[in-house]
Amino acid sequence: MKKGKKLYEGKAKIIYATNDKNLVIQYFKDDATAFNNQKKTTIEGKGVLNNRISEHILSNLSQIGIKNHLVKRLNMREQIIKLVEIIPIEFIVRNVATGSITKRLGIEDGTVLKEPLIEYCLKDDELGDPLISEEHIFAFDWASKTEIDKVKKMILRINDFMIGLFRGVGIKLIDFKLEFGRIKIDGKNEVILADEISPDTCRLWDSITEKKLDKDRFRKDLGDLIPAYTEVAKRLGILHEQSNVSAVNITKLSSVKRKKK
Ligand code: 5GP
Image (cartoon, rainbow, N blue to C red; front, side, top):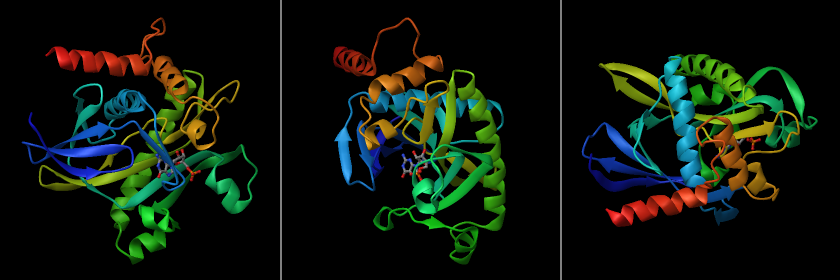
């Protein structure tokens, strides 16, 4: 598979064309941004960890029948994915109220929700990804009723599965963001899960201590992010428990390998 030109660069990822028109390469950067790009830095090794964690979650989701864009991980920082037309909506799923919802609605931080809450935000950095309703989605044709119905069903299964996956390794899944894309499979229009699922896009708290193991460490200056993401990867069995290899070392190892070739 040949890597072609850059098609799109986002805050945390770059998409490259390939010689197959239906497939693209998703490259995970080390850049971290928060508060609509007002806070920015580079965290060495973050992309490597997110690539591995997202691969793990998306391949597990495939196994339970959740169609998604992942084809396979190529190397430390890249995945081959199916080219989709991204639906311009961020689907936020909440099990516990924290973050923007507590400020917006005055809800006490840490309130456990009776059932999962799905919120929709328009994917528009200039507008700061504003919260929208289903009526907005249909009024402005951002997605059809059929697509939203399919997405909502998938979201609830994804949430159930991920709650269990993380609970099994002593982590509470507080909330997360999903993106979906349109694709034609065997001539049929389908909606599949896209983007990434990682500690950049989820809130993950240790089940006992409630220590934050996600991007809030960066957003709220809670301390190093790499040890927390490494902890998530280790607990999920992606990095071996006994190994002391940090993501930074992995990055260095992979660049040494590349130079040797
Ligand atoms: P909140 O609305 O409380 O800021 O975020 C809710 C959840 O969605 C959090 O897990 C957060 O990480 C995720 N999320 C919301 N918007 C974005 C975004 O633009 N980028 C990323 N990486 N995650 C987001």
